[in-house]
Length: 279
Length: 250
View 1 (tube, rainbow over the protein chains, first blue to last red):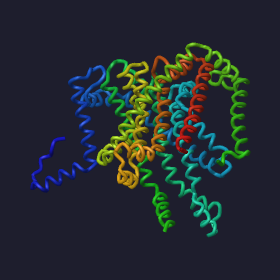
View 2: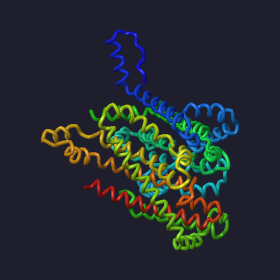
View 3: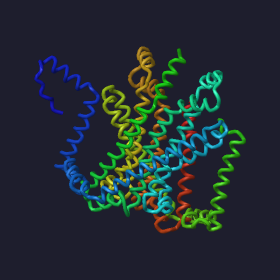
View 4: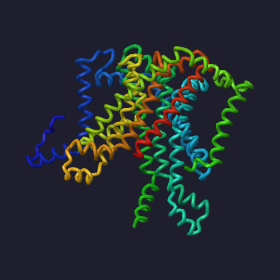
């Protein structure tokens, strides 16, 4: 990074410069900028254009070959819709199954090992079967996204229900709370942070499942275009398309993170509670 | 554990029995197309035929070699990167969030790039698996070494321990549990991503054979391969967990 031109008095400038040097955020931006510049130089001077293009050429391809192409945009929209649908279904079924499995000590002991066993299976081995069953359209991608996203949510809902402090339970009971009250005021608030961990992991896994299925089905959708661009040794639009998908993935992850940040009063409350219990 | 009670065990056994029974009934009575669900006896026959072929073992060898290469690369690169980063507070603050941010993006997106760079053979799967496994290993290495107790280090130094002694007797034992967790996660991610890469686009290996059986509409053979993968991964899980527990309990 070039030193910015600073017209302030020397000591102030030096300290400002030092502050920038020590600020992790600016260094991170500088590092990423340096990587982009390095890629640009490498792409322009050394790289074989059949495999690698500089970032400016990729941006150009994004502007000229991806964005004006209605079919590619439709495929990307479809991908977004599939991720959203798969994630919504993962949350619905994941929370329901999680609540059922975590409901009692017995159901947890009986069913949680089954969930963990299923979770451990590398589902990608089932991908051709899922496509065979649900066809080449969005149904298969949603199904595969759902089967990936649901497990972290179940596991974390069960975990969140399990670790309720005996102390809190006894306090609620001694103050005359009913079973419903305990679920409403003790178990559910306690579950929230763990639930959001599950939702975050669930999003990562849903993205993985949908994108795996998209890439596997090369007859249509995003997978078709990645294959066409890769097979025609046309890396610029390929990288641009991958960039779009990465942006979609980042946007979805950010959405969940923001929701977690804003919708977790329970997080703060339990921390406060823990602190007050310690005292 | 709570799962070991007799009632819980019988629920688990009956779950397995219900799944197997439903499979048998649905496929034998023909209420589900045998294209999706071939009868169990056909799958068992297919497994027997498959294991006897040379092609089976060569596919398994290809996949195992790919996984091993990818994992070794990810392990060396991940542990080195993670360890070096923890030696500098600034590097940690700058780079660690970049790594953990990148890890939330499905690396699968970049599979077409790997195939473009390294071809359709095993090379692209090694690169893909290694990249995927690199992140959990590096992140766990960072977590493992960054929470070393300053007190212990100072105590060791004041008793005359050199840099190597500190590493060998203080840093490493403290970091070991989290390091091993990272290796386990990395290994299974590596396993799944190599299989996935082979399924999506390759010329050989276990994943390719599953996809091929599906394309050729040979459900019994596809189920045989899937069964093989599931049994292998369940066995590996058990082995890795018991090894991990043994190392931890030392």
